[in-house]
Image (cartoon, rainbow, N blue to C red):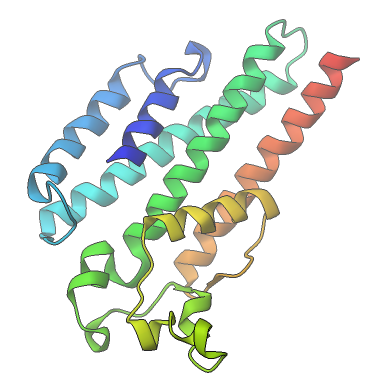
Amino acid sequence: MVATLVATALYLLLPQSLLVAPRFVLPALELMLLVPLIVINPRRMTRQTRVSRVLSLGLVGIIAAGNLFALGLLVHDLVASGIKNGGSLLVAALQVWLTNIIVFGLAYWELDRGGPVSRTQLPRAELPMADFRFSQDENHDTVEEVADGSSISADWVPTLIDYLYVSVTNSTAFSPTDTMPLSSRAKVLMSVQGIAALLTSLLVIARAVSILN
């Protein structure tokens, strides 16, 4: 909920020229999808229905689509000649980059091993195939103090923080670091995120140099 609200706030603070619709349309739609999800799981993610699954994935999809559209408009404005509000565009680029981290972290969290409810409520033998391989998944045969926290020894499962970390490293290194994508959809998502982050970074650097000059 907090991650979704932060992403929504970042969208609301974007310049009007980068919005896909009137300012409050997408945020209102996102909140409409978020409310029933909170009602179903007011404290912890322990219940999942077909409706809640569709709503949660739809919410992530809407945030992602709005942010990628804003990125496209941002690219257009940054490369356009005669733009006078370069400073505000650089701030907007930071907002788009941060939203990119949040939304892809949420996407990884929603998709991997059937989603957050499946990961915590189902026995490991019943989990769908993993989309990501974390270091904890292969630490069972290392030194004892590390092996004690592995997936096998401690029944460890990734949380939202772990997926946000994957998203941060993918947006800064533009490639996987200690967590490897396994499924095709995970590789596609990481590729889209890496390209978006690289494009934003390159254009921001170029624009910043231009402003300094």
